[in-house]
Length: 413
Image 1 (tube, rainbow, N blue to C red):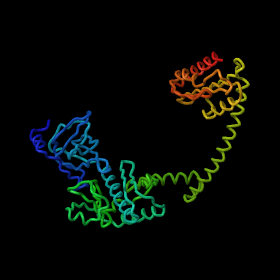
Image 2: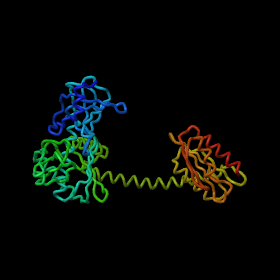
Image 3: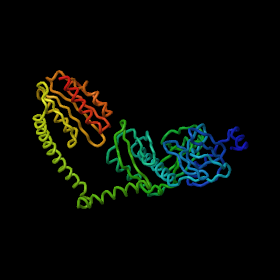
């Protein structure tokens, strides 16, 4: 239960003090619970002050613990900050709160890195950041114009030079007069109490997120992917510990490839391309041989087919070839006159049924016949009069579907 004292404070409109905006390096603090509400089995807790960062501005919320209970999510609503817990706190005064520092510091590195990179893009090439996304595994920005590979390399180098210079990152709360004198990279989203993140004289950006105190804490920035996006460019990049983790992964891959291919690291790409050419050549030869083999298979099946009223009914359950090859055989056979194919294909967790006929076998409509047999394997499919196919998950019943299709066709011939 919340005491009447705190209930009265709430009635008076008291909101949590957002001290996370002032000191982003504080990860332990003591607070009082002033309200608890329940929504969909979760407990939404309001504190009289908080260092927990609520989700917003493209940055995910902090996580951590309140009185030993896991904080899954933090959000803002109507000026209030809510901490979402699985369990209901039993203590309300002098509550010990802990922020997951590894998560917090990671987001501080990524978000500060985004500010710095966006500033270099704007200052050097007049490229505006029009989109920003930060998650536990991904960091990207969207730009309003294209840029070349050479420009990209120059931007990355310039950004890292600023990191090495250990430039201070400051938090400003300018009044309207001072605000007009700042070269803001973007327009503020609010009209009052505007918080500006200042990186030396490089960047002035209105932002409510968590940031580092110095660019040196970024370690490095590395752009890892680029793609055209909505007339501009989307950049994916990593900062700080994420950059180190990315390097560790790629270095491990590089070392393993070096040993597998038995070439120096600088020749890995050349050797991989050589292997690719060899593989493509073998693929082409294999494809040609498979087509020849399917031709022989088609002729063998035709010789052993059952004749029903002058029509050859070719039926087979396939397990040793791909379904693509099964279709090739059906096409080879049905391009000839007086043939109907009933093929079942079973592989792992999928069963397939294919019914096809020659153009001159007018008595059979493949699309009508296949519907009932497909029910045996809980499958769906379709096609046209000449060819119909479908698949289902009841692999063990494929023979039932196969036999039913055969009986239906035999009765119609």
